[in-house]
Image (cartoon, rainbow, N blue to C red):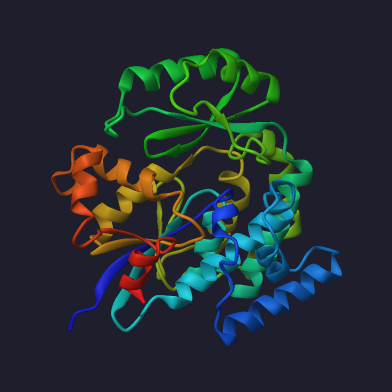
Length: 337
């Protein structure tokens, strides 16, 4: 029987929330041993245990800081990826949003699990200690998830006027990065749409020049020799594909630390490329949570994938045989186990 082809999508910062507590409760013995080794490294730096964080009551000031959120999310994604039934599903490619790029590299084999953890832990700390500014998120779609070009143009005009920056293209949303004074202006002046504009807590101005110090420190802290050719194709935050046979590891190092830290991350393009170039039977979103479910659907609608033109079309298509499978949703998770 032919294996089903899947593209795996890794989550970014902010995906571990109150609703995802105890995500690591039932990990298998191999993963438990791996996380315990990671906790030894964290203990030496006086950081809380990953298992302890997962069990304890969620507190934003604890769970959403870089030193804790990044390795916690990485561990949750490792659990989900290891749970996928590889006898029935072939991973055709891997991508991620923002911090999810680091997770994607580890899962693809471009980094070992240990190197992946060390990178994710270190970058969580670096961006926390040396990152400036913050991020806000704002929708550029209507209620039925169709792109609103006028709203998008209005937003980008306001962002340019105030000296803020495009940070992430996230399906039907744009994430803006900038100094807090610029964000405060946008929070006051952008037209209110539901809960938006919304400032993402404990985030610096990721993927903008405000992270230049973090970029410089990362390039001096890490060694490109720890990077490998991926065993599974990677799709980066420009929509570029890093293949197992042609990847230049120095170029991969440079993109990871000199480019994507300080340049906009185009998650939308990575999903477009995933669908068009790899023709998956499913897109599988790793947990924790389901924060990327809507943005992925909005990209599919924007490109009229399989005839989708609206939110209602997408939700109907998901009823019998979901194309987008979120492992943070129990009934969908079971499809890939």
